[in-house]
Image 1 (spheres, rainbow, N blue to C red):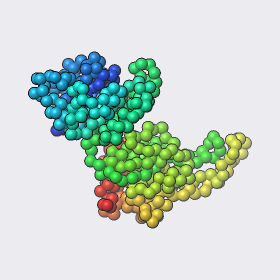
Image 2: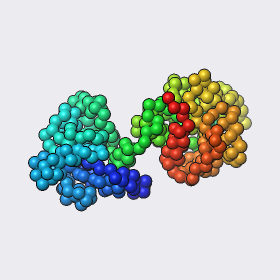
Image 3: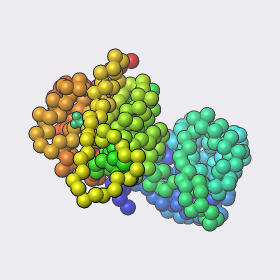
Image 4: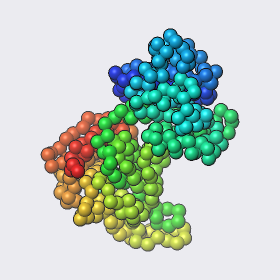
Length: 401
Ligand code: C5P
């Protein structure tokens, strides 16, 4: 599986309880247990009685390397105090969390080992719901999930797609790799907690007529990676995105736009914020007029008059109460000179520069950060890792409250 190297030892020294509810998605939790062991965590599996009907405890025992607990009344396990000793973990992840288990947790019930240790815990609780789409959308489940969220429980997913019952909809458990990454994120430092960040990403599309327009090959991946990294760092994130084919990262509010003018309007609508990161490849020009009907070919040369678009970043940076502004400079050559002049001209505390050949549209990037202290080259890496470094860097430069 790709990306597994990222998780190795990420939770070293942590004690994690993996709770298994009675849903068919329990078979995926065997893979989740394997991934959690790879993080270096000490993994303890607790199954409900219904959970045991889907996957045998021997599977989880072999994968976790620890005895599997199922009953409050097992005198051997933890001297009959399993609900207390297991509750003193660093985190409890319940996956799958069925509608019934969610209802019991929401009401503080303690009628089996898993629900009792969740009630007796002194650590974060994360749940990964898994159920039929009707059960998920039922008002009772909506209420119970809202109660748990209000109690500070992290609800991961669910996903949308094909269900075991053959129906299609919301209620699938998130994939094990995503759950494992979410658990790792839960332990990550939160240097942007309490800060609002507005980010632009992707290309803009400047219409010529109803079926044609001017655009560029920006994939949006760098901007989306920055949005995901800011959310991981605890920020309240608004992502103003041009047309791209990317899923919205968890805990990010996306505002979809097309033209530079609509991007500008959405950005100003999302302000004020503490941070503005302009990653979008905004078209510098747009057609002076947009034809109301499809332009027919005539065989003759065609003239297109282009007028300049507003520079969104420069306008935001010039505001009286400007957020901390980060610009991107994608250049074909002379990166240092152009990036520094962009930083000066737009009065930006921080610019991230890259050569177009290194980054535009691809999965990896090579960037240099420019700030008042000079240039800081980062090693070539996937855009997700680069995004984390950029966010760490900007968080360190932010004025303290
Ligand atoms: O001046 P240049 O277009 O090279 O500057 C690039 C930076 O400015 C990027 O951060 C980009 O998102 C932002 N920008 C903008 N509005 C524009 C043009 C660029 O926000 N119209």
